[in-house]
Image 1 (cartoon, rainbow, N blue to C red):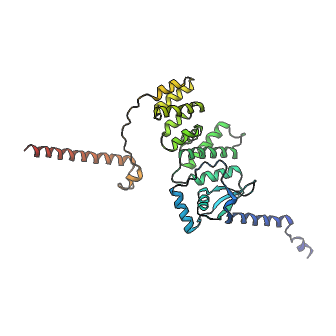
Image 2: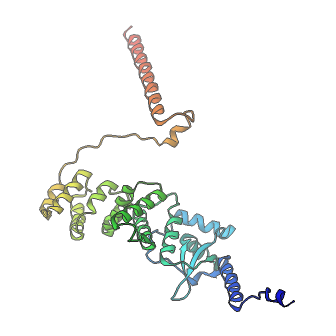
Length: 314
């Protein structure tokens, strides 16, 4: 009896408290209704929340069906909660006059919160260049903070691996990630022009190498010339800046040059073309087929024109 009694183990006080903590963790992962006023935006949130047509649609959906997908937030040291994912749903509830919103509260450190915030928003259909630029930058910084051990990996190699990870998870090359992050060096007025498609991405990348005061000067010059720089002009502005020769006069001389007319381009996405071809057709095969069909169309057109000339000459 004594030996069997020795084998009986009672739960310790610590174990009992751990069980309570586990229950508390489970409770935090459950959906909670939290007051709209208790939630505030993520610090330096790079994604714009606009009261546009899509927001109006979201508001109407919230009014009719409620919030179908809970937002994710984390406790804030200052009180209340910081939204990690779901800024648009939060705004839609505000506009719809809702007092509460379903929330999943998670204890996340800064890096975990950034990664979740960025990844949840990068899934959106339309993302502005500025949003993607700052999102990539924030995610890259978070990955670096999370940690590559310096005793195993050099700083240079670690940075390459981090950029590669950001690109792989976003479905783009590491060079594309770097070029987008470079846009964060543009002053806000120029970056807004990129978002508004007044300045194309490639010229914008080159302009990001100009000093802030040179970018300010460029805005004045563009306003004076009523023109935005082409890629070649942006490249020369960058070169002049790096050589220390970019003055008001040299900038004006570059921007006042007559631009070569851009040749018209017709582009088709693979999604548009796919419905006309068998599934096993490669892009190369589709291109060859299109060329053959255009040649046939051209020949028929020439024959019709020839027949029309003969008819008119009778």
